[in-house]
Image (cartoon, rainbow, N blue to C red; front, side, top):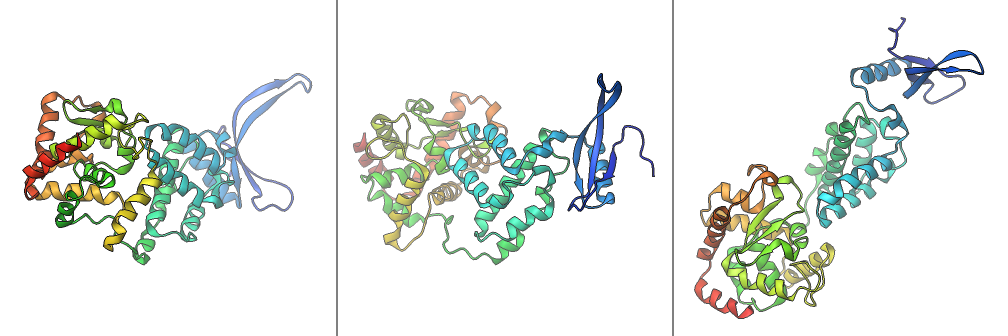
Length: 368
């Protein structure tokens, strides 16, 4: 069957090849003076095992043309391009998570991105020895990379959205309950050790609800002690970019950390230097280990949400405070002084959950 003019061609190459059919598309022509003839210019869309597969590739390309030069780009090339655009917008913790997922997919690194099929992606997922949370992060990275590639017409089809990870979730049995919130009784006990440096960091997280990666990136210029709020500029999602109210109960800790910082960041070590995610996480885990508990910093976020719910804070305020989806495009919102005050009033409802709150607040001022 003769293909329409300008549609492209599928031709069989000589010799014994794994992919013997070349799929090409004419994109123009030029005059060769030496040969005194018109030479067609074309791009190679790809190579196929059969003519039928090649015709399908050609049909997909004509239906949704993309940069055929992308055939030269490997998985690693696309990751590099994507990360250069993505990383300046996310937290250090998110970057480390993406880098770990990329490393776990080393089998794909040197393969041409445009040649990858669903089977290639599914195989690297199914052959992984990682647990479900890590596999889920690998899937997220694939989604992000294919979204980027589709955005810039580097591929014609998004195979990432068809990758299945459900069976890994079914097989996975978490060794620890990392995301479980801290019981209110335990939160009350933390206040008994409010003079301890590490305890103060935990209470700061519980009473404001940010992800640890977000808190670690808060700079001093993002903190307004007078109006009692801080601004998160680097977050996992657009909804995560937001102002966060500082509860009165933990305000003295925020003031203390602000004034003792030597690194320009609010959340810092005892000596004033900047934390990195791994070091803080290790200290956090070690803090709860003597209690027979395994907890990671993320549990403080769940604790905040649980406490806000218990304090009868309206769901729309909870979403604004913790940066959940559904609170609008925060990056385009201008928060007024009245709105900040309203959020602070809501976060202060947490004090009602504590016994003898007034005494605690009075004692906490000693940290100033």
